[in-house]
Image (cartoon, rainbow, N blue to C red):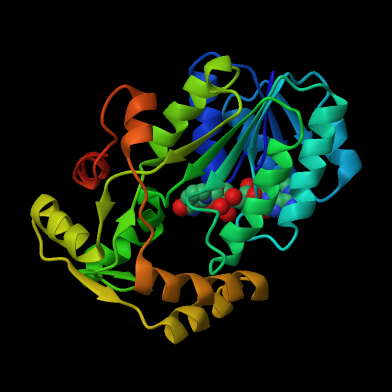
Amino acid sequence: MILVTCTTGKTGQAITRALVSSGKQVKAMVRKVKSAQTAREMGAADVIMADLANKDEVLNAMEGVSAVYYVAPNMDPNERLNGENIISACQSENINHLVFHSVLHTQIEALPHHWERHFVEQSIINSGIPFSILQVGSYMQNMLPMWEKMLESGIHRMAYDTEAPMSLVDLEDVAEVAVKIIDNSNFFNGIFEIAGPSITLLEKAKILTSILGRKIIAEKQPLAQFLEHGKAIGLSKYTLSMMSKMFPYYDKHGLVGSDKVLEWILGRRPTTFDEFVRRIAAS
Ligand SMILES: NC(=O)c1ccc[n+]([C@@H]2O[C@H](COP(=O)([O-])OP(=O)(O)OC[C@H]3O[C@@H](n4cnc5c(N)ncnc54)[C@H](OP(=O)(O)O)[C@@H]3O)[C@@H](O)[C@H]2O)c1
């Protein structure tokens, strides 16, 4: 049985559905009763309520588990504690394989939520548990919550420079990787960059315009406006402080990796933004 953490978030759902579809037995770790129901609907064979910051609850979640797919909460001040709890529980229960769903380029100190992951990755490497670290780029799917608004306004708006290159990856490709590597000793003790082809907001807007058959322009949302909106919708102070560092970094450097490792693992080239938009438009 494979334990998947943060099962009902954007990432956890994609990974859980893919593992279940491939015939794997998934034990879902959730925090809320409502999330437990969602996990069962996704086909999880077992569901356990646990908070990653609670060492005993995490250890308890390992019962009957042989491998762990660790999705960490997004921008969490307890990043290192959560990681230590997962690692020590895996060690106690002699888990066969720990997959850490990390982020692209954890070496970047200017991105504190990446940099914190760097320490969790170090602890995993030193843990003695057979591991695989996936350093995953930003998802193409991140624009979906704004899709309708974009169609209404004709503006694809993000809080970073319209010419900043980003190696966006299709979350469906990432989920396919999860199925290929879990419990697969060929991937033990390796770090794998999971990034798609690089693209800018301006290039995305051109593709959206041509596929959707209506003019979409790219626009940078001023950071102050983004943060004000984030505060209004209840994002935590910690998340807002991470974002206030992330977007200026993206302005200057973008976030670009190589898509060759993903191509090698998938055995085909990664999904392009063009293909992603066609799929979403058709659905
Ligand atoms: N989004 C991207 O583009 C992207 C790209 C690469 C990597 N990632 C990584 O993927 C991970 C998940 O991101 P996401 O965008 O999928 O996040 P998300 O949709 O916000 O989901 C976060 C999940 O974490 C759970 N959670 C939060 N705190 C928890 C805790 N203390 N104990 C147990 N569960 C907890 C939440 O459960 P509740 O519903 O109970 O709050 C929720 O299910 C992050 O580590 C992120 O860095 C994301």
